[in-house]
Image (cartoon, rainbow, N blue to C red):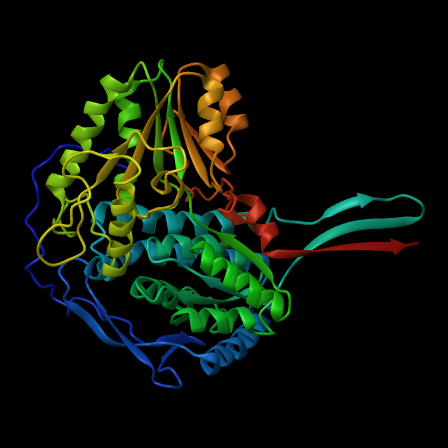
Length: 502
């Protein structure tokens, strides 16, 4: 991804309306390879985070009847999909990846009009989604069972077989790439999938799923519904769905796990929030480390892996803080820019509800730490814009230090000793990612082995969970199960042991 940089502010969009005729906006459910209305005709309106413009007044929401139909369609499509040879399945997924790339402009547009996501970031996400499908397509031939032994006049081997009908719930912040992290290994291993798009940002997911049929994936193998918690609960409670994967919040994960256990004890994978530490030792490259400390600006802080707890060695605090402030100022100067402009690299918060949550965190944080002047102010005018907030000198138990804000907020602390900062970094119930800055390879290996998180970046951005060949797993209350890498294919299959006597 491009580094943050100084640049001329792009024209403000808060008072300009989008032309909504450029591409069709998907508002129906996509089931069995076709667009259909929800059975109850229940709909919802959606407005842009950029300028409050109403984008859609009647997107359909699914209920239990729609989920039943999606399951029936998945069962039918699954029979055809399982009849595909490995080569046929691989070729279909490769074509699908190509279609995602060919339609990247439309996918970007469908997100930009609703969320204001900058083109530079959206293009990166679509490319990552395509790469994910390519990776798992090319892993199909090498994903096999294991011959255990040929002893005692018998053969023993282990196979990995698909669950069958599965479900995926994707988030509002990176829907297409998160969809790919679930759908690619699920389809590569022979499952059928029902995807629930985020009710806050559904258009790009709906469109991306619809491309599957054009790629030669049989109708019913991938379906997409929209809706709120009622829809998610219907998926988790359905007796014919054998596995469900969620990227979302801890409360939602608990509800999905409870419903899954209450129904058929389906397998559950959850990827949840983070409060990732960025640790800067005195021998670090301070220019690059300062940039890493500002990764919280990506998507205006709406990324679970982003570093939001900054630990600076006390000897570099005075030198690095001006660098961090300068990058934050450049970001502020770029706010309220046209998401279609190449010069825009900022984004609004994706909806007003999220901005209200962020403001509440900031107001409470003011009682627990020092907020640098001007930070956290809501920008006047339309849209969901807020200035980045930098807190310093937090109390050890401050909620602004412990809780995931999911907005442009960082908390900066200082440390003296290595053991001290490791203890502070691990003093969290969240363990998604972390970032370490040092030129000492021994220290890098030592500290990374002690940090309680699933993904560690050393002298670079906190590991981005969109690298298809590298598994991602949350520790503690940041998740259960694995996405990406060969481990993800195991996560979407059931293990079977077979012993054949002579």
